[in-house]
Structure formats: structure tokens, C-alpha cells
Length: 89
Image (cartoon, rainbow, N blue to C red; front, side, top):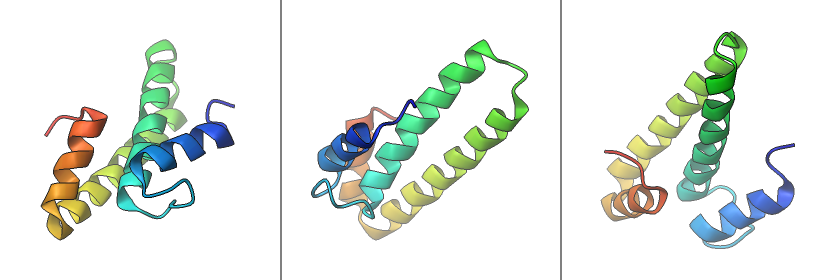
């Protein structure tokens, strides 16, 4: 499996307050970004995999919703996560 429990813990520890902090918006955005990168690589090899394409679009939408929430709630945290994940916008 591409996303092991250890990798999840590492993402949560890096971007959240602790490795148990799975509900923080930053943690979830980092997890979604990791999954989006993986699915993007998969789709580069398998262009006609439409179910994966749909899953990717749903993940991008979820991440966008969380980013919009974070932007409205705390602009500094939003800017920090954008810089940390090297995202556009």
C-alpha cells in the first residue's frame, strides 16, 4: 500500500500539533496533498482510469474546501500551510 500507518503518523506529526492530531485542518490538507500527488502520478501512466480521475477530483475539492475554511478562520495558518506544502495560490 502506498500510504502506510507510519507515513500517516509522520505527516500528522509534521503538519499537526502532534502525531495524534488527525483532525487539524493542516494535517488533513497535508494528507490530501500526499494522496493527490500519488493519484496524479498514477494517472500519468494510466490515462483512461476514470474512477481514479473521479477520486482525484473529489480529493482536490475536499482539500480546496479545507483551505477555504482555514483562510476564513486564520489567514496566518493558511499562509503557513501553503508555504510548507509548496502549493500555488
